[in-house]
Amino acid sequence: MCGLLHDIGKLLLLKLSRDFIKHGVPTPSAEMGALLMRHWKLPEALVEPVQFHHDPDSAPTHTREATITYVANRLSHRYGFGCPTDDANLLEDEIAVRAGLTESMLGDLDRRAPGLFQVARQIVA
Image (cartoon, rainbow, N blue to C red; front, side):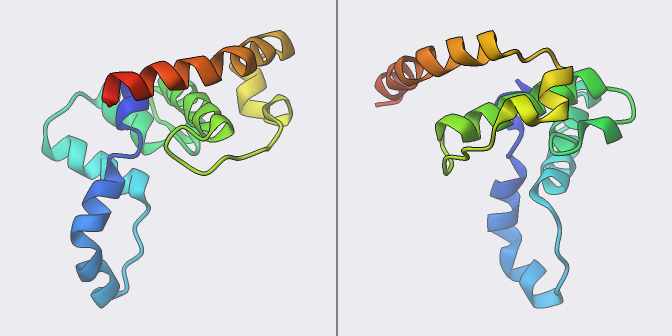
């Protein structure tokens, strides 16, 4: 669920962008996502991982969930799932390695990701 919602704040930023630009108040999309999710009264177990998915070690109580959301986000960028592709080596990412990502797992994901992406595209089409 956190993976699906992790960038929800971008929707709010798009809707309110004129106000933020007008007042010169930069607000990260993760912060806006958390604000929106709290407004919707979603549980903190979902809100906090979304809010801290770029810095999971800063999550006050749901660090594990924020870490998983962080790794899922990094993997989405690795494969270009709904975002530009990022070629950064995840095995050099301290958080991803600490979360348990191994060379073997990454190799398996690299082999399976294109097929999973195609299945997802067919479902959405």
